Image (cartoon, rainbow, N blue to C red; front, side):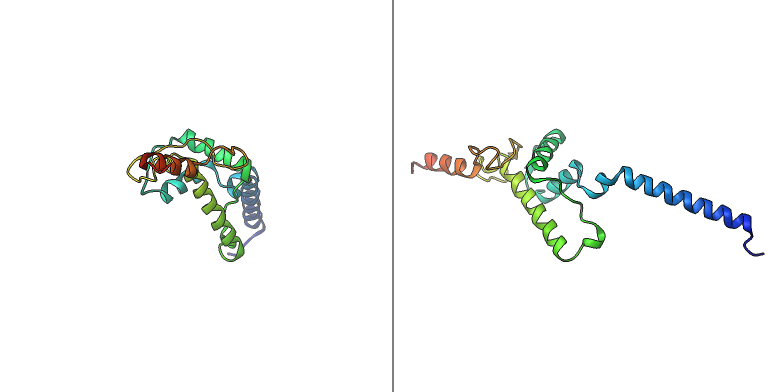
Length: 150
């Protein structure tokens, strides 16, 4: 019993339908597939700073994500075929910048970089967007005042 014309048409029709459905889903979800979302950033930062007591809500992560992407652009998702080489290095640098910016955007340094205190999100650290906000110099100034070196 070989493959007759009707069986071949059914298999071909189902295959084409699956291709069209898959292509349509990929087209409508293209930004979600190619760009990191706020939830991805939240899970990355929570994992990266698991040693800290993060007291940051989902809304605060969303605000940070919106502000970060407004000033730095969308963060592309690392695709499986770009997992090595120059694109991997660029992705790693972007994620390092994201983590550094997040930590500077919290009160971590204002609390003297104490890992035992709760860390809260304040505002996006961006020297050109808010030039007066420098948590490291503020923390250093507070330390000098408390030790009497000022």
